[in-house]
Length: 65
Image (cartoon, rainbow, N blue to C red; front, side, top):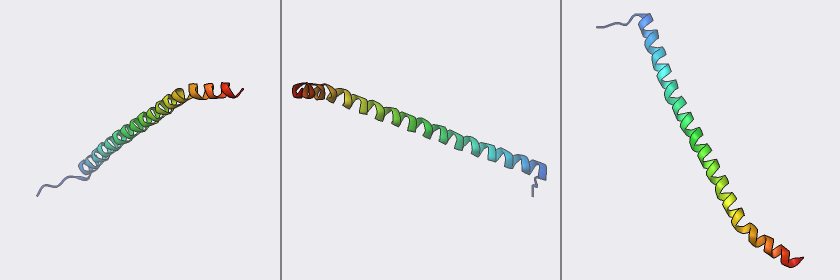
């Protein structure tokens, strides 16, 4: 049976921890990018709706004055 000494075992554990941290960091980065993209998309959509409606509101208010 093959035995790993404690130094090798600790190295292997640290390496596994680093790999997991890298994967999780990548997931967090991907999620942050997706969230930012969603926020920008929502802002642009809202801005386009406002830009579309604003001229009609402007004309309606001019008629009232």
